[in-house]
Image (cartoon, helix red, strand yellow):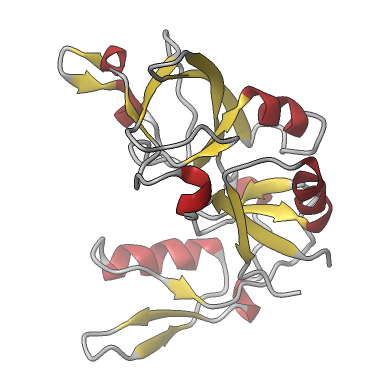
Amino acid sequence: MEKYSIIRPSRDEKIIGMNYSSVHPHPDCFREGVNILHRFKINKFIELDQELKFTLSRGANLCDVMKESTISAAGLLISERFAKFLMPYNLGIGLHKFYNAHIYSLAAMQNYYWLQFIWDKSKDIVDYKNTTFFVINNRNEKNILNISNNEEYCGEKEKIGKNRSILFEKIKFTNPPIFDIFLLPLRGYIIVGERLKTDIQNAGFTGIEFLESPIEP
């Protein structure tokens, strides 16, 4: 199986600047006191009748991937250049969507995209039987869960409630993913294959860091 990595906005202040969130919602995002960025769903695309607008935070630098902390859905705020670069790759039909966005600074307005990812349960490739799931109990100990399919996973999730999470250290797949970049099932990580990771690094895009993924070969 191909090696995979997590892709996310860089935390390196030498690259991104000094602000925790590189952008914040532009005033045009608010309608009757409601922030349209809060309309995004974790595993569902939405329709918008306006483009997304952000303001560059004080001390932050414009990069190809920007840190954004308002939208709860899984995705990346990316430059127009990076969006065009990604389009020829396999992002999964029906599993991603580009939303037009702009970032406003004192100098100018820049074209960006919010690239959202979802995971279709009908394409589930998680090897539940060979992935070790657990929860942390009140004594900070691991309680191993016996889960063999998505239905049982959802049942256990409902049992433990919203205050705790079902965790795993490594996840196994029944089949190798066919996508170059995708949302990791059961977790909010965005995953890239080794080929795309290398191409991104060679192209010199900014504001990106890669971490080891929990996908077990």
